[in-house]
Image (cartoon, rainbow, N blue to C red; front, side, top):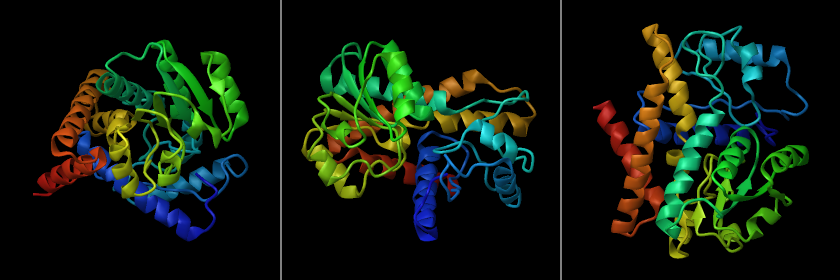
Amino acid sequence: MFAYPDDQAALDDALRLSRAMSHKNAVADLDLGGGKAVILGDPRALKSGPLFEAFGRGVEALGGRYWSAEDVGVSPADLAYARKTTRYVAGLEGHGAASGDPSPFTAEGVKRGIELCVRRALGRDLDGVTVAIQGVGHVGAWLADKLAGAGARLVVTDVDVEAAAVVAARTGAAVVGPDAIFDVDAEVFAPCAMGGAISADTLGRLKVRVVAGGANNQLADAEAGVLMRQRGILYAPDFVINGGGIINVAGEIRALQRSEAFDPAWVEAKLGRLMETLNEVLDRAEAERRPPHEVAVDIARARIAAAKS
């Protein structure tokens, strides 16, 4: 849910996000396609139970071709209203197959991916590494907790000043303004807000060695990925590193379809495999002298083609 300027902007974002979900599910080895719904409106002012019940009716009308779960601007509490009018909502509590809020699992995958990238780029663990987190909503806040627990030093920002202050009080992070996050002296930049954060302009300001975060569609355009490689910045493709949440949701859908209880071990195995895929992407990118996002898209498309055949 976002205050898009007009219908076309919302449609464009939904299409970008649905493509990212297709790639994300493919690289996570999930038996799912990819889709995304967006709601036009300021989530801080226009949320209501009837709104999400209406959204649920829209999802139900698709007859199971689309499952919904929380994302930017939407919480599990919001989707509890949608669950009143559709069966096809995951990431909630209250039944044996329930997986709960997927945000901590997205954050866990991102944290593991950052660890992997820091080892590759810097030859060290997270203790003492400075990470600049852009956006401390659901995923960003969980990521901050996990990184702080591993000994990382944090600098955070969010358009919601209060949210940033809460995370800072809990983790010891420094807080900067939304635009200043690109100028932070850090080893890692973790985009966890809206898409398009990495562009030619922002790359000119970043001092980091690694870009790895939870946001979808982090690259403003393909050229940004090429520029990162030219500048020696290791990039973890967003739809690879941030797949933990959809793996958790897929575990719930799988359990519902099989009339079984949710299986955390299945989720953990898939998350472990996802980190192997990230390593494979970065190995191939290095060997082929190509930007990691191009390699990741190739892997995703190959897996989609194999599934279709």
